[in-house]
Image: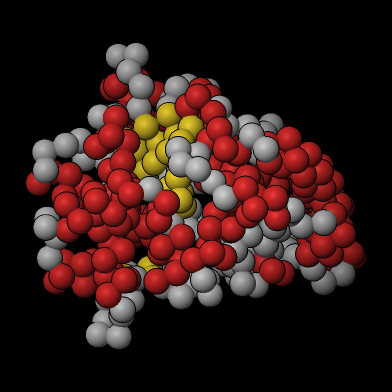
Length: 370
Ligand code: SF4
């Protein structure tokens, strides 16, 4: 079974199968080693890991570790993207991690997801602002744009000798029509992943959606060859979009962007896919199905911290004690509060963004950010 084709990984949601296929471990047995486990851990959205127990051994010894969490800037960020960075922020605040965020303008350019490098750089700053506005600590966070840091190219060149074209082709599923930039990008990405290990000698974990595991595996193989710490992985489940389809920035109706207006968010939530019945009467008689409901899923993943409140919502849904309109209003309320706060935080952090980057950033691009 190949999950990768042309550098894109197919989305499979049978998690037991994925755990076996990728040879990763379930998160459950190590859950009590996390300090105040985050909602995403308790609800099994962060569901698997590779060698994170080794990182926890370092935490137990009082040592610092690194979280490496890159972002490909090809569009605005939506709530699904921010979930990963909310989890990384938890690792920084509660587990003491330093967080490193490379923005791969080069990747989005060579894979033709943006029309120019300039556009990718602008989006990198816009995305960085969304991430940093969640509340990152500048003393424990480093950001860089890939083409702006000469270290990346030099390291990618050095690492390239430890890979062969057939490995890259097999791991990423490249075909004859891929351009050389796409193929070399595998070396660039290895440099990103190994950055905190090579520069700071820090044990590193890479939290990603499970489909990104091939990138971690290839970096682990090379780390072993050059005798440095092999990066660990933490894996998140795929998050569904509002329509029930995968969330995608190119289909705005599937996701809430961090910079959406309250009106845009309200409209999208009102059209969201639910597990409700076609009529109020049937809903009262038969109840709804929270297991297929996106509104329920969004409340569970993004907003409601209290487990008891989630249990009550679930039983109210199943027993027909609540209508979909009420849930949508509840979700809208949470989303709008988040968007309003996020807007204020973006404004606050806009001119502090420089403190998070380890190279100069373009002031003109910064001034253009919303
Ligand atoms: Fe979903 Fe709420 Fe409708 Fe149940 S009542 S299906 S949880 S929107």
